[in-house]
Image 1 (cartoon, rainbow, N blue to C red):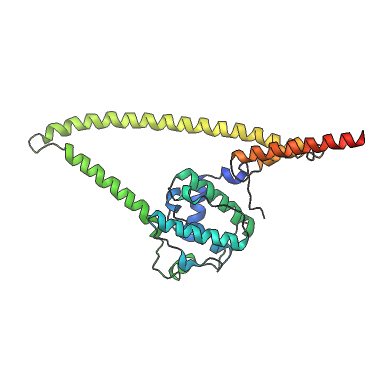
Image 2: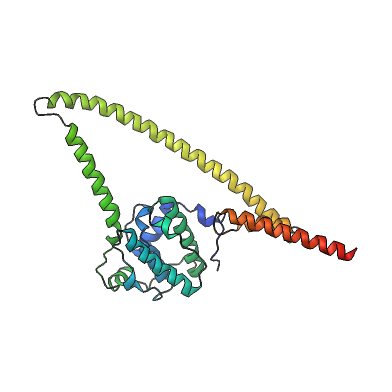
Length: 273
């Protein structure tokens, strides 16, 4: 069972819709956006479902709204990782910001890990709602949506305030309505154009991603060839491909390995001479 999953692993090509479906089906939640899982509570319960009873669910707060409360959830998660000897560093400061890509990447890793433990089979004996309630607080399945709904309410309030600030008085109301209809039509056309352009952009990015993934996959297969897999260059390349995190340290480690391997070969050559 691999805990260090390289960035080129197929796990990181699982889409957000599949991740959300995986979470909602197993935990009986109704998440619609990846960032709604930023509090860390979902991750804690996924591990609890994979290893029943290991997570102290009474410490997990599904109603966490502040970064402080979210950090407490991630502390629980990291403690459980340490207990289970799961070698995965949790980038808490990035995850609690609610940025979709950071949270998606972590959830992709989590799905791959949980599937490697249970073969992707749902634990039918696990009652996620009961486990949340037994945690000590009345944590309904809507609890982890409160933060997102609160943000949505604020946005609606701000929009309403803005509309009120520019709304016409009763006397000029009919004229403004007629003008607004034409303006709305133009705005809808502009938005439709933007959506079309974004779809084209996404298609282009997906094709580009697949193109480079295919190349990296070819490099990986070449490095795994029996006649090449043990040579220093192939090992150095695999160190970069299989690095758990996309950091410069992977390149540095590969370079250091090559440097030591070359020096070792030179010493052996001199001794043979």
